[in-house]
Amino acid sequence: MPQANKRSHWRHLACAAAALLLAGCSLLSLWPREFGVTYADINERLGKHFPFERNIADLVRVTLLRPRVAGAPSGSGQTTGRLVVSVDLDLRLPSLVNATERSLWGSVSVSGVPRFDTGTQSIRLSDARVDRVQVDHIPDALSAALSKTASQIVRQVMEERPIYTLTVEQTRRLGSNVRAIDIELHAERLVFRQK
View: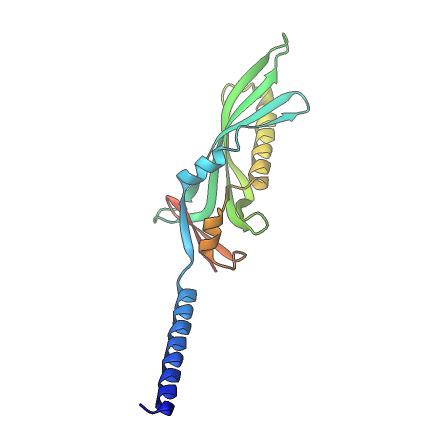
């Protein structure tokens, strides 16, 4: 084979290899970068940050226990776009008779829209609202005030604290642009997808 034909042949091979490489890169960028996390995994990680305790005016001690995250049901396997976080409550009130405390048990459910916080690489609740408050054996005189206070604390804690923080591996799976993340709610899991 003459020298000129060899050079031409190698140029054609190099161009074909470059074209294949570019095509492969463009296909990879079209490939969806996503992963799912089950609510059980989210609950396990979130539970490590509880119990959480807060005192109110040195009179009432509110302890939040056992958070449980789920998607708000809508009926077709998908959800309404809101996460529901249910938290058990332990309200400790001072006794008016002696130096002991009285414990009241209950639960609060808060729902909110999951949003991706780029600074902490975590999922937080926004637009949080209290959907249900239930406290057992609460005295009528304290019912509204304690329910309102407990609800405000739970809503505030759920907005301030991350529901889930992405691992390094999960961030890597989403690619280089982890600032633009869609969060899709399903019946059993959250799906994170790069926009």
